[in-house]
Length: 212
Image (cartoon, rainbow, N blue to C red):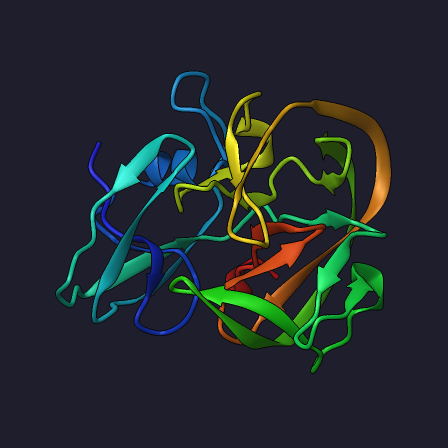
């Protein structure tokens, strides 16, 4: 079924959809459910936006809608996270473990293809089982990771041979995906610009403010 938007609206970084979009399709695009087996979708209603950017995630594409629309909704969870010990690229060239990041810290961010600085607005902590990508990147299954193509997938949708976007701009092939069911401390970062940041050299999406 049809959906419009999904990559952010006029008022921030939330994944706004026009309120006539199909909720289940939007939830599957966000990685919350499967269109075949089903599942639960959490969403929040919002006022209309001035425009809606389309996106491609988890094999589902949505077009942009460059006009205002009277109502919106946003997929509000789950809340993606990265394992303690994940090295975050700071603005200026240094690195910090994600558990040591504080509100107000400046991290290295990618905004419309350009490296920029972004200030941390919020740090979330929880516990999750982990997926380990290439023996290095340790993430919750719902973490949103950027592909070299510029599209995104949640970690649990990645496949061997997928091409991820590395910090140096080169593609990095997924060669190994392992898992651990043991709960581990995890963290995620909300950026003031709502864009992506680099974790262990991979580009990942920042926390959606509506998912707090």
